[in-house]
Length: 87
Image (tube, rainbow, N blue to C red; front, side, top):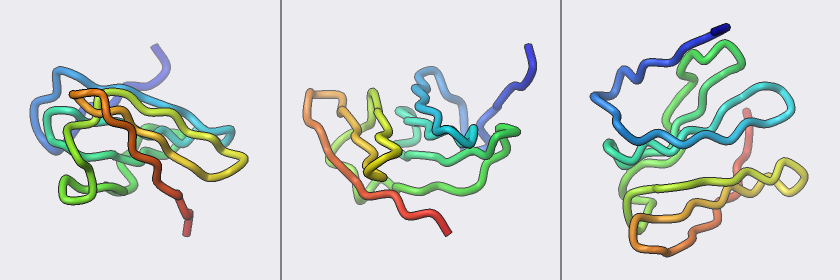
């Protein structure tokens, strides 16, 4: 094991991850109803999508780096597309 992430936001049983070419990781935090952004060292940078922006708890996600689109699939089958802007 090279790195490990433990969420400071609570007890997580269901995390799903997508990684960009810089090693940033997008994490679908099902239990806390958030999308997290971690840096290449797996340190939490910030919550990038909060509960009120999601239609349902995020189950899966996919990041298209070329377009900056982050797609999330919800618990009940809906898909939401977000544009991710890095600062």
